[in-house]
Amino acid sequence: MSHPSTMRALVHSGAPGPDGLRVEQVARPEPGDDEVLLRVVAAGLNRHELFAIAGHTGDDLKIVGADAVGTVVSTGYDAGQELGGCRALVNPCLGWPDIENVPEVPTILGGPVQGTFAEFVRIPASNVHQVPPHLSDAEAAALPLAGLTAYRALVTKGKVRRGDHVVLTGATGGAGTLALAMAVALGAEVTVVTRHEAKAAEAISLGAAHVVVGVTDFDERLHAPADLVLDSVGSDSFPTAVRSVRPGGKIVSFGATTGPDVTLSLRDLFFRQISLEGTSMGSAGEFAAMLGFVAEHSITPTVHACRPLEEAPDAFRDMEAGRGVGKTVFVL
Image 1 (tube, rainbow, N blue to C red):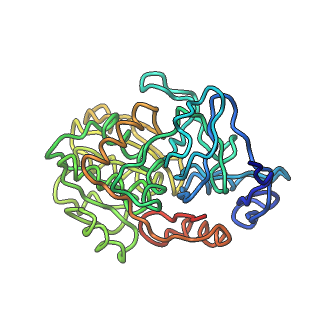
Image 2 (image 1 turned 120 degrees about the vertical axis):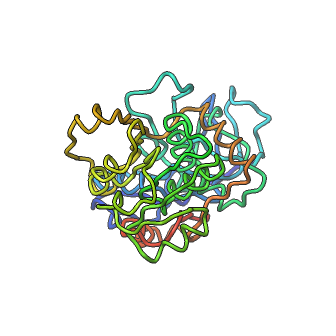
């Protein structure tokens, strides 16, 4: 049976940022020998996409997007024919098979590789996974990159144990809300730090034991020092994070929404014996473990809104402004 040679996609070119986004008809991809072609049903929006379009000014049409859930419609010769027709979730991190061998810069769908904000996307067959059965398409589409990031930060790097006091900054975005749910499932006592008073009640409803409003002096308002601070805010929050962690505690950095540059006294680390870890995305093994953890604990990503691709410029601007709690999902 013949199929159309083009597809509808959200492309970016020309002006940097959301002004360069538009929906166009582009060539439909075909899977390579070890790839599958996924018909995208829903695709989650991450801050990664905001960074991807911020510096892109060329005339080449970039299709961003890392997350997707959909149906496998064709497979390459070596991809495994049994995958055809299955409902699938995409691991967006490419070429990172195990925890030990960390790549210099992890490759993510929608970076140098064309992404998921399109009717079809081709991906390695090894990056196809079953969808946790309790999740809807929109919920599943909000999970991959944020869930992988949160799981690696908490489990692989943070080594969270039951009873730990975990402080989350930037905890009301996609990765933050999943980190909150995962930390609670691990038995931690979680304090959420947010810049927005209006998001405090939502954080409590998602499982936070405590909420502090304001990222620059939250150490003074914690009920107890933190065993672990999970920080994605960066320059605005990092000095306070160092002050808030107990002697012998740990800080895990996985983002820098307010900027990456900080001033740090090494004495604060070695006198108080604080560990500092960095993390970004995760390996294929961690992705599979994350899916199992999500299924075991019935963790459901928080979906802020479902929108068509045509509303992408506004959705990107809303994310940049920090509006809403959880993830925006594009439905196709």
